[in-house]
Image (cartoon, rainbow, N blue to C red; front, top):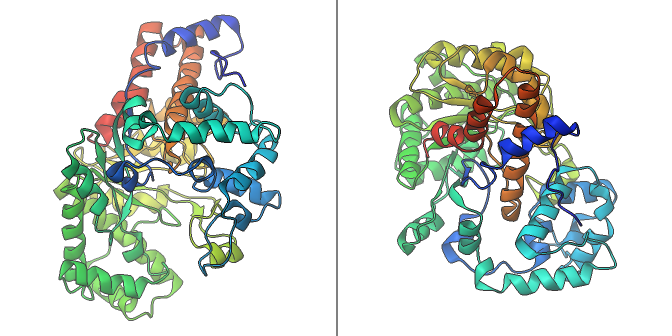
Amino acid sequence: MLLHEDRLFPAEPATRAIARRLYAPIRDLPIVSPHGHTDPRWFAENKPFPDPATLFVKPDHYIFRMLYSQGVRLEDLGIARKDGGEVEGDPRKIWRLFASHWHLFRGTPTRLWFEHAASTIFGIEERLSPANADAIYDRIAEKLTQPEHLPRALFERFNIEAIATTEGALDDLRWHDMIRASGWGGKVVTAYRPDSVVDPEFEGFSANLDQFGALTGEDVHGWSGYLAAHRQRRDYFRQRGATSSDHGHASARTANLSKSECEALFARVVAGKASAEDADLFRGQMLTEMAKMSLDDGLVLQIHPGSFRNHNPQLFSAFGRDMGADIPRQTEYVAALKPLLDAVGNEPGLTVIAFTLDETSYSRELAPLAGHYPALKLGPGWWFLDAPEAMLRFRELTTETAGFYNTVGFNDDTRAYLSIPARHDVARRIDCHYLARLVAEHRLDEREAAEVAHDLAYRLAKEAYRL
């Protein structure tokens, strides 16, 4: 395996040389990871990761969705079933199965991320294959027992300045409390993800709502008490470092109903009489309510729409949510975001970050919106769009209208901890690739491009997320 120093840079020699010069001063900048799904328990307990399969394969839906597409059963990858049914428990067997299918990842970002981690963290320079699977497994397993490969040591080695995890509204945040009490200097903060008590179609919504009320002491079956409970929980999260909320709704729809209309809609939701239209309208209203709350408490509002979640009902039934069967869908923003933007879009002190899984909306909708409204910023390409070509398309389709400074840099949005440096390195290289083209075409001078490269790699994310 060879990590070429010029990977992802332009093939044309003169432009490649510019990209090299732009990349050199930013390659080792601190990592700001403002949105992701790493487990705060790792940093709280600081215990060794158990084995290579548990570290690389089982938590990474990019990996197991590809293997599943080629007929590999999730049970054979050790993925836990909801019913407690039997799954493969030997991590070495799981690793061998992974290695025997490594060729499936040719040309994918997953290969870039994995090989970056294998090389830079574990010193492995040989491409994974069935022939060397055991040797590579043994080398990684041995290193995982060493102090320098514990979660906190890796955090410092990765030069992570700050990382945000994502927890649900009902989470007690015990691991964040443990991190804070430990005296360790690593900055690990949470983010408020209230989908389970905002989406009437979320499984167990009624029971979740009851728990929400018990947790806050508010009458969450009335509209005013329900909003008060959210304010209380947001404050609880803020006390544990949260600077953002996150909302993974099916669409970007927002609403701005009157108080009486909200009360009537919420009454139908609480009574379990909400139609599909009611559920969608309620989610939209709550995005606007959360934006209004952000004016008071300063949390950045992230909107992650466009995923047809749990598309495979058999997988959802057997394994639950987030099992790699979420599929991008067409998403509309101009009309969808208008009620929210009518209410708060002109507020310069508010930050609303819109993401998409539908890149056809970049130049037609999102860039023009972000290029006008002070409150709106564009999130980077995430799930399915965090590949090199998609990252380039993001810059090509948004810069002409929104510029660089109505975007928020890069976030890795991952639960695969060891891939974080790799993902940021890919983003930095791709941005230098794009900026080098602008310099070569005399659209930017190199000094300007160097400033932009630094801002995209570090400053914009830090400032947008108030980290």
